[in-house]
Length: 318
Length: 318
Image (cartoon, rainbow over all chains, first blue to last red; front, top):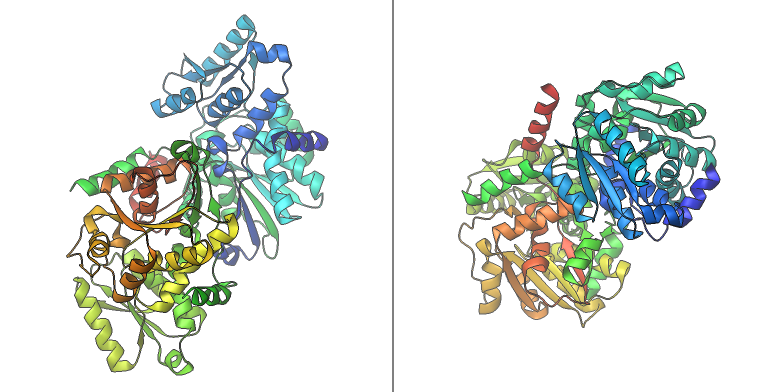
Protein backbone atom coordinates (compact mmCIF):
# COMPACT_ATOMS: atom_id res chain seq x y z
CA UNK A 1 0.00 0.00 0.00
CA UNK A 2 2.99 2.28 0.51
CA UNK A 3 3.52 2.31 -3.26
CA UNK A 4 -0.05 3.54 -3.67
CA UNK A 5 0.75 6.48 -1.43
CA UNK A 6 3.89 7.26 -3.42
CA UNK A 7 1.82 7.20 -6.60
CA UNK A 8 -0.82 9.45 -5.03
CA UNK A 9 1.91 11.84 -3.95
CA UNK A 10 3.15 12.18 -7.54
CA UNK A 11 -0.40 12.63 -8.76
CA UNK A 12 -1.16 15.34 -6.21
CA UNK A 13 2.17 17.14 -6.39
CA UNK A 14 1.08 20.13 -8.47
CA UNK A 15 -2.52 20.11 -7.23
CA UNK A 16 -2.48 20.20 -3.44
CA UNK A 17 -0.93 22.91 -1.29
CA UNK A 18 2.34 21.69 0.15
CA UNK A 19 1.23 22.87 3.57
CA UNK A 20 3.81 24.34 5.93
CA UNK A 21 5.25 22.55 8.94
CA UNK A 22 5.01 24.84 11.98
CA UNK A 23 6.98 24.65 15.21
CA UNK A 24 6.72 26.41 18.57
CA UNK A 25 9.46 27.07 21.11
CA UNK A 26 6.80 27.06 23.82
CA UNK A 27 5.43 23.70 22.75
CA UNK A 28 8.89 22.17 22.67
CA UNK A 29 9.63 23.58 26.11
CA UNK A 30 6.28 22.36 27.49
CA UNK A 31 6.72 18.80 26.26
CA UNK A 32 10.49 18.37 26.22
CA UNK A 33 10.25 17.07 22.65
CA UNK A 34 10.74 18.44 19.16
CA UNK A 35 7.24 18.93 17.83
CA UNK A 36 6.36 19.43 14.14
CA UNK A 37 2.83 20.39 13.16
CA UNK A 38 1.76 19.49 9.63
CA UNK A 39 -0.79 22.24 9.06
CA UNK A 40 -3.52 20.89 6.81
CA UNK A 41 -5.75 23.78 7.86
CA UNK A 42 -3.78 25.55 5.10
CA UNK A 43 -4.79 22.88 2.56
CA UNK A 44 -7.20 23.73 -0.26
CA UNK A 45 -10.80 23.88 1.08
CA UNK A 46 -9.20 24.21 4.53
CA UNK A 47 -8.68 20.52 5.31
CA UNK A 48 -6.67 17.40 4.39
CA UNK A 49 -9.87 15.97 2.83
CA UNK A 50 -8.96 17.55 -0.51
CA UNK A 51 -6.05 15.13 -0.91
CA UNK A 52 -8.21 12.02 -0.79
CA UNK A 53 -11.07 13.49 -2.79
CA UNK A 54 -8.82 14.48 -5.67
CA UNK A 55 -6.88 11.23 -5.60
CA UNK A 56 -10.07 9.23 -5.70
CA UNK A 57 -11.88 11.08 -8.49
CA UNK A 58 -8.67 11.23 -10.52
CA UNK A 59 -8.50 7.41 -10.56
CA UNK A 60 -11.94 6.87 -12.03
CA UNK A 61 -12.32 5.47 -15.55
CA UNK A 62 -13.31 7.92 -18.31
CA UNK A 63 -16.80 6.39 -18.28
CA UNK A 64 -17.15 6.85 -14.50
CA UNK A 65 -15.93 10.42 -14.81
CA UNK A 66 -18.51 11.08 -17.51
CA UNK A 67 -21.31 9.85 -15.22
CA UNK A 68 -20.20 11.90 -12.23
CA UNK A 69 -19.61 11.36 -8.52
CA UNK A 70 -21.76 11.55 -5.42
CA UNK A 71 -20.83 12.00 -1.76
CA UNK A 72 -22.67 12.45 1.50
CA UNK A 73 -21.23 14.91 3.94
CA UNK A 74 -22.12 18.05 5.85
CA UNK A 75 -18.48 18.87 6.35
CA UNK A 76 -15.07 19.12 4.74
CA UNK A 77 -15.49 16.06 2.50
CA UNK A 78 -18.35 17.84 0.71
CA UNK A 79 -16.24 20.82 -0.25
CA UNK A 80 -13.26 18.61 -1.05
CA UNK A 81 -15.28 16.49 -3.49
CA UNK A 82 -16.87 19.60 -4.98
CA UNK A 83 -13.53 21.30 -5.69
CA UNK A 84 -11.73 18.13 -6.84
CA UNK A 85 -14.60 17.31 -9.21
CA UNK A 86 -14.57 20.83 -10.60
CA UNK A 87 -10.81 20.72 -11.22
CA UNK A 88 -11.21 17.39 -13.00
CA UNK A 89 -14.27 18.46 -15.00
CA UNK A 90 -16.52 15.90 -13.32
CA UNK A 91 -20.10 16.47 -12.19
CA UNK A 92 -20.53 16.22 -8.39
CA UNK A 93 -23.66 15.68 -6.31
CA UNK A 94 -23.45 16.21 -2.56
CA UNK A 95 -26.11 14.83 -0.23
CA UNK A 96 -26.38 17.04 2.84
CA UNK A 97 -28.74 16.85 5.81
CA UNK A 98 -31.49 19.51 5.82
CA UNK A 99 -30.04 21.08 8.97
CA UNK A 100 -26.66 21.83 7.37
CA UNK A 101 -25.66 25.46 8.12
CA UNK A 102 -26.32 27.70 5.07
CA UNK A 103 -22.65 28.78 5.04
CA UNK A 104 -21.57 25.20 4.26
CA UNK A 105 -24.15 24.80 1.51
CA UNK A 106 -23.02 28.06 -0.06
CA UNK A 107 -19.36 27.05 0.06
CA UNK A 108 -20.08 23.68 -1.54
CA UNK A 109 -22.26 25.24 -4.24
CA UNK A 110 -19.54 27.81 -4.77
CA UNK A 111 -17.30 25.03 -6.07
CA UNK A 112 -19.98 24.10 -8.57
CA UNK A 113 -21.44 21.00 -6.92
CA UNK A 114 -25.16 20.21 -6.94
CA UNK A 115 -26.68 19.81 -3.48
CA UNK A 116 -29.41 17.32 -2.64
CA UNK A 117 -30.95 17.54 0.83
CA UNK A 118 -31.75 14.53 2.99
CA UNK A 119 -33.12 13.84 6.47
CA UNK A 120 -30.92 14.72 9.41
CA UNK A 121 -29.96 11.22 10.60
CA UNK A 122 -26.58 9.95 9.28
CA UNK A 123 -28.35 6.93 7.77
CA UNK A 124 -30.73 9.23 5.85
CA UNK A 125 -28.00 10.79 3.77
CA UNK A 126 -26.16 7.48 3.30
CA UNK A 127 -29.30 5.82 1.96
CA UNK A 128 -30.14 8.75 -0.28
CA UNK A 129 -26.61 8.83 -1.73
CA UNK A 130 -26.68 5.08 -2.40
CA UNK A 131 -30.09 5.28 -4.03
CA UNK A 132 -29.03 8.11 -6.35
CA UNK A 133 -25.77 6.33 -7.11
CA UNK A 134 -27.68 3.20 -8.18
CA UNK A 135 -30.28 5.17 -10.08
CA UNK A 136 -27.99 7.47 -12.08
CA UNK A 137 -24.67 5.61 -12.09
CA UNK A 138 -22.81 8.22 -10.05
CA UNK A 139 -19.73 6.81 -8.34
CA UNK A 140 -20.10 7.10 -4.57
CA UNK A 141 -16.94 8.42 -2.92
CA UNK A 142 -16.91 7.38 0.71
CA UNK A 143 -15.37 10.05 3.01
CA UNK A 144 -12.94 7.70 4.75
CA UNK A 145 -13.20 4.03 3.80
CA UNK A 146 -12.44 4.46 0.08
CA UNK A 147 -8.88 3.18 -0.53
CA UNK A 148 -7.93 6.04 -2.84
CA UNK A 149 -9.21 8.50 -0.25
CA UNK A 150 -6.96 6.78 2.33
CA UNK A 151 -3.91 6.92 0.04
CA UNK A 152 -4.52 10.58 -0.71
CA UNK A 153 -4.86 11.37 3.00
CA UNK A 154 -1.57 9.59 3.68
CA UNK A 155 0.35 12.05 1.51
CA UNK A 156 0.22 14.70 4.26
CA UNK A 157 2.38 12.60 6.61
CA UNK A 158 4.59 11.71 3.66
CA UNK A 159 5.33 15.39 3.00
CA UNK A 160 5.90 16.00 6.69
CA UNK A 161 8.60 13.32 6.88
CA UNK A 162 10.15 14.55 3.62
CA UNK A 163 10.40 18.00 5.20
CA UNK A 164 11.67 17.18 8.69
CA UNK A 165 13.19 13.70 8.37
CA UNK A 166 12.47 10.57 10.41
CA UNK A 167 10.13 10.91 13.35
CA UNK A 168 9.80 8.90 16.56
CA UNK A 169 6.07 9.34 16.94
CA UNK A 170 3.20 10.62 14.81
CA UNK A 171 -0.22 11.60 16.15
CA UNK A 172 -3.30 11.88 13.93
CA UNK A 173 -6.97 12.41 14.76
CA UNK A 174 -9.36 9.54 14.10
CA UNK A 175 -13.02 9.73 13.03
CA UNK A 176 -13.78 7.46 10.10
CA UNK A 177 -10.11 6.54 10.12
CA UNK A 178 -9.09 7.62 6.61
CA UNK A 179 -6.47 10.09 7.80
CA UNK A 180 -5.11 7.81 10.51
CA UNK A 181 -4.83 4.78 8.24
CA UNK A 182 -3.23 6.75 5.41
CA UNK A 183 -0.85 8.37 7.88
CA UNK A 184 0.11 4.99 9.32
CA UNK A 185 1.00 3.59 5.88
CA UNK A 186 3.22 6.57 5.10
CA UNK A 187 4.94 6.58 8.48
CA UNK A 188 5.60 2.83 8.62
CA UNK A 189 6.83 2.98 5.01
CA UNK A 190 9.24 5.88 5.55
CA UNK A 191 10.41 5.30 9.14
CA UNK A 192 9.28 1.86 10.33
CA UNK A 193 10.61 2.44 13.86
CA UNK A 194 8.21 5.32 14.44
CA UNK A 195 5.07 4.81 16.49
CA UNK A 196 1.71 5.95 15.13
CA UNK A 197 -1.01 6.85 17.60
CA UNK A 198 -4.60 7.83 16.81
CA UNK A 199 -6.33 10.41 18.99
CA UNK A 200 -10.09 10.37 19.34
CA UNK A 201 -12.66 12.39 21.30
CA UNK A 202 -13.70 10.39 24.36
CA UNK A 203 -17.30 11.29 23.46
CA UNK A 204 -16.99 9.50 20.10
CA UNK A 205 -14.61 6.67 20.99
CA UNK A 206 -15.73 3.99 18.54
CA UNK A 207 -12.22 3.68 17.05
CA UNK A 208 -10.71 3.30 20.52
CA UNK A 209 -13.19 0.54 21.34
CA UNK A 210 -12.99 -1.08 17.92
CA UNK A 211 -9.18 -1.11 18.10
CA UNK A 212 -9.26 -2.89 21.49
CA UNK A 213 -11.95 -5.34 20.34
CA UNK A 214 -10.45 -6.00 16.91
CA UNK A 215 -13.83 -5.44 15.26
CA UNK A 216 -16.08 -2.52 14.39
CA UNK A 217 -18.10 -1.19 17.32
CA UNK A 218 -19.82 1.89 15.90
CA UNK A 219 -20.66 5.03 17.87
CA UNK A 220 -24.38 5.70 18.20
CA UNK A 221 -25.13 9.41 17.75
CA UNK A 222 -21.95 10.67 19.46
CA UNK A 223 -21.87 14.23 20.83
CA UNK A 224 -18.55 15.98 20.46
CA UNK A 225 -17.42 19.47 19.51
CA UNK A 226 -15.05 17.77 17.08
CA UNK A 227 -17.78 17.43 14.46
CA UNK A 228 -15.47 15.93 11.85
CA UNK A 229 -14.76 12.92 14.08
CA UNK A 230 -18.30 11.68 14.78
CA UNK A 231 -18.17 9.01 12.07
CA UNK A 232 -17.15 5.41 12.76
CA UNK A 233 -14.41 3.20 11.32
CA UNK A 234 -15.10 1.17 8.18
CA UNK A 235 -13.81 -2.22 7.06
CA UNK A 236 -10.77 -0.87 5.21
CA UNK A 237 -9.72 1.65 7.82
CA UNK A 238 -10.14 -0.86 10.68
CA UNK A 239 -7.98 -3.40 8.89
CA UNK A 240 -5.18 -0.93 8.15
CA UNK A 241 -5.32 0.54 11.65
CA UNK A 242 -5.13 -2.89 13.32
CA UNK A 243 -2.10 -3.67 11.17
CA UNK A 244 -0.17 -0.39 11.44
CA UNK A 245 -1.30 1.74 14.33
CA UNK A 246 0.37 1.31 17.73
CA UNK A 247 -2.36 2.72 19.91
CA UNK A 248 -5.50 4.84 20.04
CA UNK A 249 -6.00 7.24 22.93
CA UNK A 250 -8.91 9.52 23.82
CA UNK A 251 -9.20 13.14 24.91
CA UNK A 252 -12.00 15.06 26.64
CA UNK A 253 -13.96 17.97 25.18
CA UNK A 254 -12.20 20.36 27.55
CA UNK A 255 -8.80 19.09 26.44
CA UNK A 256 -9.76 19.64 22.80
CA UNK A 257 -10.65 23.25 23.57
CA UNK A 258 -7.41 23.77 25.52
CA UNK A 259 -5.45 22.50 22.52
CA UNK A 260 -7.39 24.87 20.26
CA UNK A 261 -6.54 27.74 22.60
CA UNK A 262 -2.86 26.93 22.32
CA UNK A 263 -3.05 26.81 18.53
CA UNK A 264 -5.00 30.07 18.22
CA UNK A 265 -3.49 32.15 21.00
CA UNK A 266 0.11 31.00 20.96
CA UNK A 267 0.60 29.77 17.41
CA UNK A 268 -1.85 32.12 15.61
CA UNK A 269 -3.43 29.22 13.71
CA UNK A 270 -7.15 28.94 12.98
CA UNK A 271 -7.82 25.25 13.61
CA UNK A 272 -11.21 23.58 13.96
CA UNK A 273 -11.96 21.35 16.98
CA UNK A 274 -11.37 18.12 15.02
CA UNK A 275 -8.05 19.53 13.83
CA UNK A 276 -6.84 20.20 17.37
CA UNK A 277 -7.52 16.69 18.69
CA UNK A 278 -4.06 15.34 17.84
CA UNK A 279 -2.41 18.21 19.73
CA UNK A 280 -4.73 17.49 22.68
CA UNK A 281 -3.37 13.95 22.61
CA UNK A 282 0.18 15.31 22.76
CA UNK A 283 -0.59 17.68 25.63
CA UNK A 284 -2.79 15.41 27.75
CA UNK A 285 -2.25 11.85 26.49
CA UNK A 286 0.39 10.83 29.02
CA UNK A 287 2.78 9.82 26.22
CA UNK A 288 6.57 9.55 26.34
CA UNK A 289 7.57 12.77 24.52
CA UNK A 290 10.87 13.87 26.10
CA UNK A 291 13.67 14.14 23.53
CA UNK A 292 11.40 12.58 20.91
CA UNK A 293 10.76 13.98 17.44
CA UNK A 294 6.99 14.09 17.13
CA UNK A 295 4.77 14.79 14.11
CA UNK A 296 1.26 16.12 14.69
CA UNK A 297 -1.30 16.17 11.91
CA UNK A 298 -3.46 19.29 12.20
CA UNK A 299 -6.28 18.20 9.98
CA UNK A 300 -8.36 21.29 9.22
CA UNK A 301 -9.37 24.86 9.98
CA UNK A 302 -13.02 25.19 8.98
CA UNK A 303 -14.97 26.72 11.82
CA UNK A 304 -17.89 29.12 11.80
CA UNK A 305 -16.58 32.55 12.87
CA UNK A 306 -19.85 34.44 12.42
CA UNK A 307 -20.41 35.11 16.13
CA UNK A 308 -16.79 36.18 16.64
CA UNK A 309 -16.95 38.75 13.85
CA UNK A 310 -20.37 39.96 14.98
CA UNK A 311 -18.81 40.89 18.30
CA UNK A 312 -15.98 42.70 16.52
CA UNK A 313 -18.41 44.58 14.30
CA UNK A 314 -20.33 45.75 17.34
CA UNK A 315 -17.12 47.30 18.63
CA UNK A 316 -16.74 49.56 15.59
CA UNK A 317 -20.38 50.66 15.71
CA UNK A 318 -20.30 51.93 19.27
CA UNK B 1 20.61 53.36 6.41
CA UNK B 2 20.29 50.24 4.28
CA UNK B 3 23.62 49.00 5.69
CA UNK B 4 22.14 49.35 9.18
CA UNK B 5 19.32 47.04 8.17
CA UNK B 6 21.75 44.51 6.74
CA UNK B 7 23.69 44.61 10.00
CA UNK B 8 20.46 44.19 12.00
CA UNK B 9 19.53 41.24 9.84
CA UNK B 10 22.82 39.48 10.65
CA UNK B 11 22.37 40.27 14.32
CA UNK B 12 18.83 38.91 14.40
CA UNK B 13 19.39 35.89 12.18
CA UNK B 14 19.45 33.21 14.86
CA UNK B 15 17.16 35.08 17.25
CA UNK B 16 13.97 35.97 15.38
CA UNK B 17 11.60 33.53 13.74
CA UNK B 18 12.08 33.58 9.99
CA UNK B 19 8.35 33.91 9.55
CA UNK B 20 6.68 32.17 6.61
CA UNK B 21 5.45 33.89 3.47
CA UNK B 22 1.89 32.80 2.76
CA UNK B 23 -0.03 32.96 -0.50
CA UNK B 24 -3.65 32.42 -1.48
CA UNK B 25 -5.06 31.34 -4.83
CA UNK B 26 -8.26 33.19 -3.97
CA UNK B 27 -6.42 36.42 -3.17
CA UNK B 28 -4.45 36.26 -6.42
CA UNK B 29 -7.67 35.62 -8.35
CA UNK B 30 -9.50 38.46 -6.57
CA UNK B 31 -6.79 41.04 -7.25
CA UNK B 32 -5.22 39.79 -10.46
CA UNK B 33 -1.80 40.09 -8.85
CA UNK B 34 0.71 37.80 -7.18
CA UNK B 35 0.33 38.50 -3.49
CA UNK B 36 2.86 37.50 -0.82
CA UNK B 37 2.01 37.88 2.85
CA UNK B 38 4.94 38.20 5.24
CA UNK B 39 3.34 36.76 8.36
CA UNK B 40 4.80 38.51 11.38
CA UNK B 41 1.88 37.23 13.45
CA UNK B 42 4.14 34.13 13.65
CA UNK B 43 7.03 36.21 15.05
CA UNK B 44 8.14 35.76 18.66
CA UNK B 45 5.67 37.50 21.03
CA UNK B 46 3.23 37.43 18.09
CA UNK B 47 4.34 40.61 16.31
CA UNK B 48 7.16 42.24 14.30
CA UNK B 49 7.91 44.40 17.34
CA UNK B 50 10.33 41.79 18.65
CA UNK B 51 12.75 42.55 15.79
CA UNK B 52 13.19 46.20 16.73
CA UNK B 53 13.21 45.61 20.47
CA UNK B 54 15.99 43.04 20.27
CA UNK B 55 18.01 45.05 17.78
CA UNK B 56 17.81 48.12 19.96
CA UNK B 57 18.68 46.56 23.33
CA UNK B 58 21.46 44.53 21.71
CA UNK B 59 23.18 47.77 20.58
CA UNK B 60 23.39 49.32 24.03
CA UNK B 61 26.77 49.77 25.72
CA UNK B 62 27.66 47.36 28.53
CA UNK B 63 27.03 50.18 31.02
CA UNK B 64 23.58 50.91 29.57
CA UNK B 65 22.75 47.22 29.63
CA UNK B 66 23.78 47.06 33.28
CA UNK B 67 21.40 49.89 34.16
CA UNK B 68 18.43 48.42 32.30
CA UNK B 69 15.80 49.61 29.84
CA UNK B 70 12.38 51.16 30.14
CA UNK B 71 9.48 51.32 27.67
CA UNK B 72 5.91 52.57 27.72
CA UNK B 73 3.35 50.45 25.95
CA UNK B 74 0.12 48.61 26.57
CA UNK B 75 0.66 46.46 23.52
CA UNK B 76 3.12 44.39 21.54
CA UNK B 77 6.13 46.64 22.19
CA UNK B 78 5.82 45.85 25.92
CA UNK B 79 6.11 42.11 25.40
CA UNK B 80 8.79 42.56 22.76
CA UNK B 81 11.00 44.62 25.08
CA UNK B 82 10.34 42.22 27.94
CA UNK B 83 11.40 39.13 25.96
CA UNK B 84 14.35 40.81 24.22
CA UNK B 85 15.65 42.13 27.54
CA UNK B 86 15.30 38.70 29.13
CA UNK B 87 17.21 37.03 26.29
CA UNK B 88 19.98 39.63 26.63
CA UNK B 89 20.09 39.49 30.43
CA UNK B 90 18.97 43.10 30.79
CA UNK B 91 16.50 44.43 33.37
CA UNK B 92 13.29 45.80 31.79
CA UNK B 93 10.67 48.16 33.23
CA UNK B 94 7.40 48.58 31.34
CA UNK B 95 5.11 51.51 32.06
CA UNK B 96 1.51 50.52 31.33
CA UNK B 97 -1.73 52.46 31.78
CA UNK B 98 -3.84 51.33 34.73
CA UNK B 99 -6.61 50.16 32.39
CA UNK B 100 -4.38 47.66 30.55
CA UNK B 101 -6.19 44.29 30.30
CA UNK B 102 -4.86 41.82 32.92
CA UNK B 103 -3.96 39.32 30.17
CA UNK B 104 -1.40 41.76 28.74
CA UNK B 105 0.11 42.49 32.13
CA UNK B 106 0.43 38.78 32.82
CA UNK B 107 2.08 38.13 29.45
CA UNK B 108 4.59 40.94 29.98
CA UNK B 109 5.38 39.82 33.52
CA UNK B 110 5.71 36.27 32.19
CA UNK B 111 8.78 37.40 30.25
CA UNK B 112 10.30 38.70 33.46
CA UNK B 113 9.71 42.44 33.06
CA UNK B 114 8.73 44.69 35.93
CA UNK B 115 5.47 46.60 35.41
CA UNK B 116 4.87 50.14 36.62
CA UNK B 117 1.34 51.50 36.24
CA UNK B 118 0.53 55.02 35.07
CA UNK B 119 -2.56 57.11 34.31
CA UNK B 120 -4.58 56.17 31.25
CA UNK B 121 -3.72 59.10 28.96
CA UNK B 122 -0.88 58.44 26.48
CA UNK B 123 1.02 61.42 27.92
CA UNK B 124 0.77 59.92 31.44
CA UNK B 125 2.82 56.87 30.60
CA UNK B 126 5.28 58.83 28.45
CA UNK B 127 5.96 61.26 31.29
CA UNK B 128 6.29 58.50 33.85
CA UNK B 129 8.72 56.55 31.65
CA UNK B 130 10.84 59.64 31.08
CA UNK B 131 10.88 60.49 34.75
CA UNK B 132 11.98 56.97 35.75
CA UNK B 133 14.55 56.96 32.96
CA UNK B 134 16.08 60.18 34.26
CA UNK B 135 15.88 59.10 37.88
CA UNK B 136 17.39 55.60 37.54
CA UNK B 137 19.39 55.79 34.33
CA UNK B 138 17.26 53.28 32.42
CA UNK B 139 17.54 53.65 28.66
CA UNK B 140 14.17 54.54 27.19
CA UNK B 141 13.36 52.48 24.09
CA UNK B 142 10.79 54.32 22.00
CA UNK B 143 8.33 51.93 20.30
CA UNK B 144 8.75 53.40 16.81
CA UNK B 145 11.00 56.45 16.55
CA UNK B 146 14.18 54.78 17.86
CA UNK B 147 16.51 54.23 14.88
CA UNK B 148 17.55 50.73 15.96
CA UNK B 149 13.90 49.82 16.37
CA UNK B 150 13.31 51.03 12.81
CA UNK B 151 16.24 49.02 11.43
CA UNK B 152 15.06 45.92 13.24
CA UNK B 153 11.53 46.32 11.91
CA UNK B 154 12.90 46.64 8.39
CA UNK B 155 14.35 43.13 8.49
CA UNK B 156 10.90 41.60 7.92
CA UNK B 157 10.60 43.13 4.42
CA UNK B 158 14.24 42.19 3.81
CA UNK B 159 13.49 38.53 4.47
CA UNK B 160 10.35 38.71 2.35
CA UNK B 161 12.31 39.94 -0.69
CA UNK B 162 15.05 37.36 -0.04
CA UNK B 163 12.35 34.68 -0.14
CA UNK B 164 10.28 35.75 -3.13
CA UNK B 165 12.57 38.05 -5.14
CA UNK B 166 11.95 41.60 -6.35
CA UNK B 167 8.53 43.07 -5.77
CA UNK B 168 6.60 45.78 -7.60
CA UNK B 169 4.74 47.09 -4.57
CA UNK B 170 4.94 46.64 -0.80
CA UNK B 171 2.18 47.60 1.64
CA UNK B 172 2.80 48.07 5.35
CA UNK B 173 0.57 49.39 8.14
CA UNK B 174 1.48 52.72 9.71
CA UNK B 175 0.97 53.81 13.31
CA UNK B 176 4.10 55.34 14.82
CA UNK B 177 5.79 54.60 11.52
CA UNK B 178 8.61 52.32 12.67
CA UNK B 179 7.52 49.37 10.55
CA UNK B 180 6.71 51.49 7.49
CA UNK B 181 10.00 53.41 7.59
CA UNK B 182 12.09 50.27 8.17
CA UNK B 183 10.20 48.50 5.39
CA UNK B 184 10.80 51.41 3.01
CA UNK B 185 14.56 51.36 3.61
CA UNK B 186 14.73 47.61 2.92
CA UNK B 187 12.55 47.76 -0.17
CA UNK B 188 14.28 50.76 -1.76
CA UNK B 189 17.65 49.18 -0.97
CA UNK B 190 16.82 45.78 -2.49
CA UNK B 191 14.52 46.71 -5.38
CA UNK B 192 14.59 50.48 -5.93
CA UNK B 193 11.89 50.33 -8.62
CA UNK B 194 9.31 49.01 -6.16
CA UNK B 195 6.69 51.32 -4.69
CA UNK B 196 6.13 51.40 -0.93
CA UNK B 197 2.71 52.43 0.36
CA UNK B 198 1.67 52.90 3.97
CA UNK B 199 -1.87 51.96 5.00
CA UNK B 200 -3.49 53.68 7.95
CA UNK B 201 -6.90 53.53 9.64
CA UNK B 202 -8.96 56.52 8.48
CA UNK B 203 -9.89 57.03 12.14
CA UNK B 204 -6.21 57.57 13.07
CA UNK B 205 -4.90 59.24 9.93
CA UNK B 206 -2.13 61.41 11.37
CA UNK B 207 0.49 59.79 9.12
CA UNK B 208 -1.68 60.39 6.05
CA UNK B 209 -2.08 64.06 6.98
CA UNK B 210 1.53 64.48 8.09
CA UNK B 211 2.75 62.93 4.84
CA UNK B 212 0.69 65.39 2.77
CA UNK B 213 1.71 68.36 4.93
CA UNK B 214 5.37 67.39 5.20
CA UNK B 215 5.30 67.92 8.96
CA UNK B 216 3.97 66.11 12.02
CA UNK B 217 0.24 66.58 12.61
CA UNK B 218 -0.50 64.26 15.53
CA UNK B 219 -3.79 62.41 16.06
CA UNK B 220 -5.68 63.50 19.15
CA UNK B 221 -7.17 60.50 20.98
CA UNK B 222 -7.99 58.49 17.81
CA UNK B 223 -10.61 55.72 18.00
CA UNK B 224 -9.84 52.70 15.88
CA UNK B 225 -10.16 48.97 16.32
CA UNK B 226 -6.55 48.79 15.10
CA UNK B 227 -5.20 49.55 18.57
CA UNK B 228 -1.58 49.19 17.55
CA UNK B 229 -1.88 52.09 15.09
CA UNK B 230 -3.20 54.83 17.35
CA UNK B 231 0.23 56.40 17.88
CA UNK B 232 1.55 59.27 15.75
CA UNK B 233 4.68 59.65 13.64
CA UNK B 234 7.90 60.88 15.23
CA UNK B 235 10.75 62.98 13.84
CA UNK B 236 12.80 60.04 12.57
CA UNK B 237 9.93 58.09 11.06
CA UNK B 238 8.46 61.17 9.34
CA UNK B 239 11.84 62.01 7.78
CA UNK B 240 12.39 58.48 6.45
CA UNK B 241 8.81 58.18 5.23
CA UNK B 242 8.96 61.51 3.36
CA UNK B 243 12.15 60.34 1.71
CA UNK B 244 11.23 56.75 0.81
CA UNK B 245 7.51 56.14 0.87
CA UNK B 246 5.47 56.68 -2.30
CA UNK B 247 2.07 57.19 -0.73
CA UNK B 248 -0.05 56.72 2.36
CA UNK B 249 -3.66 55.60 1.98
CA UNK B 250 -6.41 55.10 4.54
CA UNK B 251 -8.98 52.36 5.19
CA UNK B 252 -12.22 52.33 7.16
CA UNK B 253 -12.96 50.29 10.26
CA UNK B 254 -15.31 48.08 8.24
CA UNK B 255 -12.63 47.44 5.64
CA UNK B 256 -10.19 46.42 8.37
CA UNK B 257 -12.69 43.86 9.68
CA UNK B 258 -13.38 42.55 6.16
CA UNK B 259 -9.64 42.04 5.67
CA UNK B 260 -9.48 40.20 9.01
CA UNK B 261 -12.33 37.96 7.90
CA UNK B 262 -10.44 37.04 4.76
CA UNK B 263 -7.31 36.23 6.76
CA UNK B 264 -9.13 34.16 9.39
CA UNK B 265 -11.78 32.42 7.30
CA UNK B 266 -9.97 31.88 4.03
CA UNK B 267 -6.31 31.81 5.05
CA UNK B 268 -6.72 30.37 8.58
CA UNK B 269 -4.46 33.03 10.07
CA UNK B 270 -5.07 34.67 13.44
CA UNK B 271 -4.26 38.32 12.73
CA UNK B 272 -5.06 41.31 14.94
CA UNK B 273 -6.89 44.34 13.50
CA UNK B 274 -3.66 46.38 13.14
CA UNK B 275 -2.09 43.44 11.33
CA UNK B 276 -4.87 43.26 8.76
CA UNK B 277 -4.72 46.95 7.78
CA UNK B 278 -2.20 46.43 4.97
CA UNK B 279 -4.41 43.73 3.41
CA UNK B 280 -7.38 46.10 3.71
CA UNK B 281 -5.31 48.58 1.67
CA UNK B 282 -4.73 45.94 -0.99
CA UNK B 283 -8.42 44.96 -1.15
CA UNK B 284 -9.99 48.42 -0.95
CA UNK B 285 -7.23 50.93 -1.71
CA UNK B 286 -7.95 51.37 -5.42
CA UNK B 287 -4.35 50.49 -6.28
CA UNK B 288 -2.97 49.15 -9.56
CA UNK B 289 -2.46 45.46 -8.66
CA UNK B 290 -3.07 43.49 -11.88
CA UNK B 291 -0.04 41.41 -12.89
CA UNK B 292 1.99 43.04 -10.11
CA UNK B 293 4.05 41.21 -7.50
CA UNK B 294 2.91 42.63 -4.19
CA UNK B 295 4.31 42.16 -0.68
CA UNK B 296 2.00 42.67 2.29
CA UNK B 297 3.37 42.98 5.80
CA UNK B 298 1.02 41.28 8.25
CA UNK B 299 2.31 42.84 11.43
CA UNK B 300 0.88 40.83 14.31
CA UNK B 301 -1.63 38.38 15.72
CA UNK B 302 -2.25 39.37 19.32
CA UNK B 303 -5.96 39.63 19.95
CA UNK B 304 -8.02 38.78 23.01
CA UNK B 305 -9.89 35.54 22.27
CA UNK B 306 -11.51 35.18 25.70
CA UNK B 307 -15.07 35.78 24.50
CA UNK B 308 -14.66 33.44 21.54
CA UNK B 309 -13.47 30.58 23.72
CA UNK B 310 -16.15 31.27 26.31
CA UNK B 311 -18.76 30.65 23.62
CA UNK B 312 -17.03 27.42 22.62
CA UNK B 313 -16.87 26.25 26.23
CA UNK B 314 -20.58 26.85 26.63
CA UNK B 315 -21.16 24.45 23.74
CA UNK B 316 -19.46 21.55 25.51
CA UNK B 317 -21.32 22.18 28.77
CA UNK B 318 -24.80 21.96 27.31
